[in-house]
Amino acid sequence: MRVSKAEAAQSRERIVQVAAEQFREHGFDGIGVADLMKAAGLTHGGFYGHFDSKESLMAEAALRAFAPSSGGAEKAEKPTLERVLAAYLSPEHRDNPAQGCALAALGCDAARQSPAVRAAFSQGVEAAVAKLLPLFENLPVEQQREQALALCASMVGALMLSRAVGDAGLSGELLAACKSSLLNV
Amino acid sequence: MRVSKAEAAQSRERIVQVAAEQFREHGFDGIGVADLMKAAGLTHGGFYGHFDSKESLMAEAALRAFAPSSGGAEKAEKPTLERVLAAYLSPEHRDNPAQGCALAALGCDAARQSPAVRAAFSQGVEAAVAKLLPLFENLPVEQQREQALALCASMVGALMLSRAVGDAGLSGELLAACKSSLLNV
DNA sequence: TGTACATCAGTGAACGCGCGTTCACTGATGTAC
DNA sequence: TGTACATCAGTGAACGCGCGTTCACTGATGTAC
Image (cartoon, rainbow over all chains, first blue to last red; front, side, top):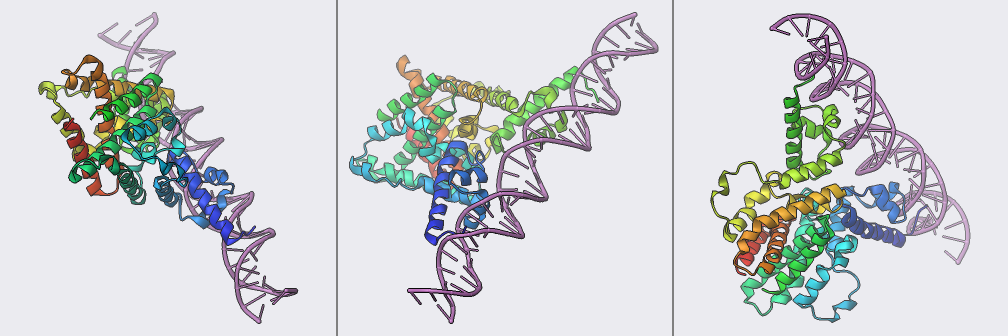
């Protein structure tokens, strides 16, 4: 059952991508190696030909989740605070963690993970800050990063709580309240 | 080895309290029934005399974690935004999740848990809002709840990210940036 | 270019381990007389 | 109040199961001639 180098690289690629989504949906401990491999169209035995351990995949999948998504077409519109908030604090984002922000989906799990995973999360926060910085370009330079960090934390907290909460009304209220509050600053 | 009714009630109490702390520290899946019972000074076999399942304890421990802490002495000082932020967004709080806010410690795990656990988290958010409302008593009534929800989400997000992030500098920066940003509104 | 063989990506059974849960048992508690 | 007995909180061995990981094997790929 040997497979060409190119196909093997694609397999590895598929595993990382599947893991990046499944970890966000089920948590790092909520999905096993065998199920990840099955979702990638493989059997579990081949996993260790690609990765040292599940934990090693966790770090790589986290990095992948933070990398800018491949489809770069929607970059056309210039991001504004309104647009960023509307997209991030939307019911669609809340209900689709697998394709959404990994900071909100895995943030509190990450605190209990290995240094490699936590390093990926540092990178994730920096990537988010880099995306948000342009929103504050009319502010003094020394305040821009501070505002971007604060906005990032607010959005992540609101999305996470809107998912954690059992009450659907409260969940929507959280999204709406944070959107409205962050717009009127 | 039967034990008096009063002692049995204390045992149950101890299990819930221990679980409320250990779950916050290790996550719902990061600590097992046997270890929880050992931490409560018991053996694991007795667990199911007190609870239907681990999941049932999870819901009860979450509620416990959201209940106001027993020591009511520090209520003397009137809470201000400054004091709330200084306490919540402190390195001490960040480094002691077991005694800290369960929204930040377990929020993204909760999204994947049973309705009972998620109902507890609704209650947790409402409890936080109730605590924060007085900070906005000079605002129009219809804005108070919105502001309290937004503040809650911001603080939870900042604390969670400061724990998730591997870089110690970035971690401190997150706490400081959110504190400063939330004060200047 | 064609052939022979070494390589190695992927398979699927098997491993040890820890987990949540069950159960027969123990012995102090609580109760009936 | 004292005695006999039923109750039941807690014990510790055992269960089935799923997990991460290992390994002997397969057969197509890639390479040496």
